[in-house]
Structures are given as structure tokens and as C-alpha cells.
Length: 168
Image (cartoon, rainbow, N blue to C red; front, side):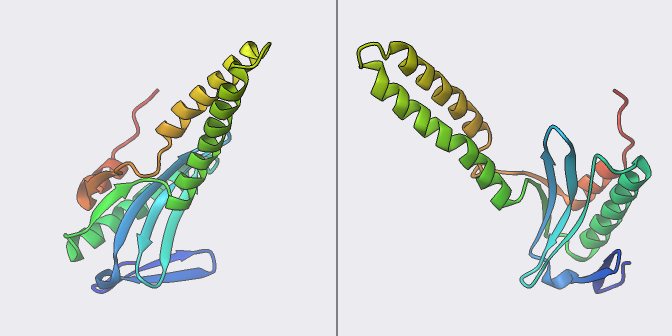
């Protein structure tokens, strides 16, 4: 529900009220795994974080309802807080966790490879360690959490959500 001062989000039995003046950030989260894709709108205030989310396992009407609700929320926020921008990024904890999952094997693989490559009979193992470390480094770099997130105006992103999905 939208009024002049607040955005009210109800999910099941839980209701959150977000005051437009208290908003400090608006983020679209999008995380993918082989099993599913999670996506949603995160509204952050100094006191609380309100999340309106869904995943790819939900029915298409539910996914469409999320897109419509998020677009309506963004338009309402845009009218009251045109100074805010939307960022597209995973949560910082998730981003650092994924980075760590690849940074640790990078470090261990490279150290293992460098230690064994000079040992007699260790060339094959050393090359394998360097290969694992190098591939992990590529994945760690692509998951780096300090890169700048994409930024959109709230109205522009609301239009993206309201646009029909392209086939294929």
C-alpha cells in the first residue's frame, strides 16, 4: 500500500512500514545458482531492511506480481524521493562469501603449485596446483565484491520491471 508518507509491505502475516523520508538505499538483488534465481527489491532505512523478493521456482503469476509490486513501489518512492538511485547488486555478505569461496582456493592452489614445482618429481603436481589457482583466480576476480554496482533511476528501473520479458 502507498500513501503520502509511507510504503506498507505485507508478506503473509508480516507487515513492514517504510517511511519515504527514512530511506537510505534502494537495491535490486539478483543471485543465481544452478537450482534457482533469487530476485527482489531491498529498501533500507537506518532501522530496518525491507525485502520484497521471489525466485525462479515461483509460478509466473507470482513472479509477475512481484515485478508489478516492485515497480509500483519504485514509482511511489521516485515521487517522494527523486534523489535516490537504485543499485543492482547482491547483498554485501553474499558477495564477500562468494569471493572468499574462490579466493581461498586461489591462494592455496598457487602456494601448493609454487612449493611443488621445484621439487623433484613435483612438476606435474605443481602445474596442477598452479592451474587450479589460476582458474580460481579468474572466478574470484569475476566475483569481486568491491566493484561498482550498476545504478539506475527508480523510474527507469520501474519501466524495466513493467516491460514484458523477451521470448527466448
